[in-house]
Image (tube, rainbow, N blue to C red; front, top):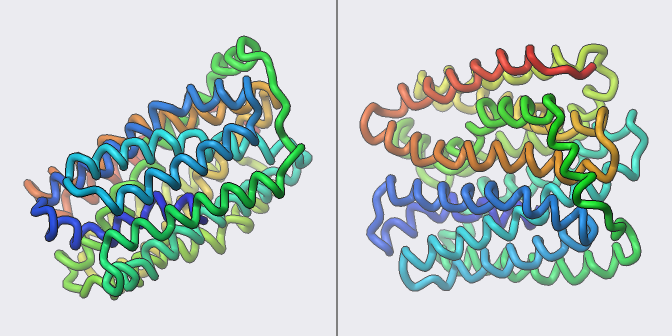
Length: 364
């Protein structure tokens, strides 16, 4: 939860940041892009580190360092320094999420891993719910700097608590060479491509959704934040449910196709620029996004060993993050030139394209 809050607390702070530092929407897009470049490009180093030093140890370092730099973002005196801190936050976060998955999923039998991962993702989306639904009010009450500093401090404290509670668990070390051989798995790479094309739209949606609702639909900032929180609410609630659905669905490949098709359809519906349609879309997208991510991350557990799992999760996460890093800036430029309608259709087209790659995958 704290991890995702440190990730997304900057989203509702964007209007205040833009006002104080005199930025336009393209500059705000750069904040999202450098963050995604950082978190994406360091996924493989994070996987190697987790294999060599243990998934638990790596995840704790990532949580602590990312919280530190996220908090420091609230103290940045200039836009350039803010960009640098967001880049360092992204790099540090690369060492938490994937190693975290590699830490706990092997503790469960295969028939329960979807549910376990769903609960893990529910925590992420609970933090997203707070960031998009509650944090606009925190920004209004305390200012954007304090709103970024507070979750950073909370993350550092939580790192120390987590280190104590998980001592002696999941610190096993492995052979890096053997772990790297897992990257030859074709389905792992296809999962990364699918998640880039479909799940990647989550980044521009969460970064610019509030601005879209404010500027194009005509909703005030705090109400727009509450409306955007619907995607996180259903994501949080759907995490365990979609994981259990995956565990019991007969054709997991067909389920993967259904949820990615759902993302494409919902993104198209944003072209109506209507608050009621937007609310329904956000509710549905919460379920579809968490389902897509759950399936993509759980796929490697069917064909790879525990020692190879950190690398596989890292390559899926890293590929989609690096490739999707351009989407916030692309979306911002598209909105500036062609408007929100065309920009939503562009994201919808990419999500629909992902279905072709799902068909090429080999898993149950």
